[in-house]
Amino acid sequence: MKKNLKRIILGVIVVALIIGLRFTSIGGKLNLESLQSNAEKLVQYSNQNYLLSVLAYIVIYIVVTGLSLPGATILTLAGGFLYKVFFTVIYVNIAATTGAMLAFLFARYIAGQWIQQSYGDKLAKFNEEVDRNGAYYLLTLRFIPIFPFFLINTFAGLTNVPLRTFLWTTSLGIFPGSLVYAYAGRQLCRIKAMQDIFTGQVLLAFLLLAAFAVLPVIVNRIKKTKQKN
Image (cartoon, rainbow, N blue to C red):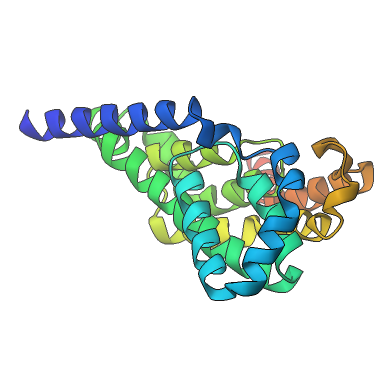
């Protein structure tokens, strides 16, 4: 009972913190207009305090992704504008994977363990499927940019996906998107809307990556179907 109470209290505190940050001026500053209007100041600061700016960038990114706040895409654009694309992708990968891990662990601690313990029998088939193909599914979801980053973190935390699997699929899965946004950040002043970044060709490339990631699952299902027949 005490353990459940601790989880409830922690959950309420974190949710309250997330809601509070979303409705403060801090949450409203992570947008394209704000980034473009402060571009010169950011460049000047990063040039004069490179290491400190990188550290601040990574910490802010971890907080945003860890608390499931909107703004990760804007931060990736900012990184591409302030730093070289190669380094930006590294910084983003470290920060986003760390933040995703925190959100994953939070979801697992607050509700994931309780769900698995309480409904383990009913979730047996689902857990078996996750054990066999969970990595492929996670990669597929990461490759498709239309799926919200925070929802994948939370959902994965509610399943029995191993932390190690979650980490490597996240790190690999966010790489293409990070590269696209970081590269787009080099042309920050020319971007009029976020929709300008993802052209039809870029979206098609992501869909092909997602299809490739889930291909082993499809092939195995086809083989099983043929064996049954």
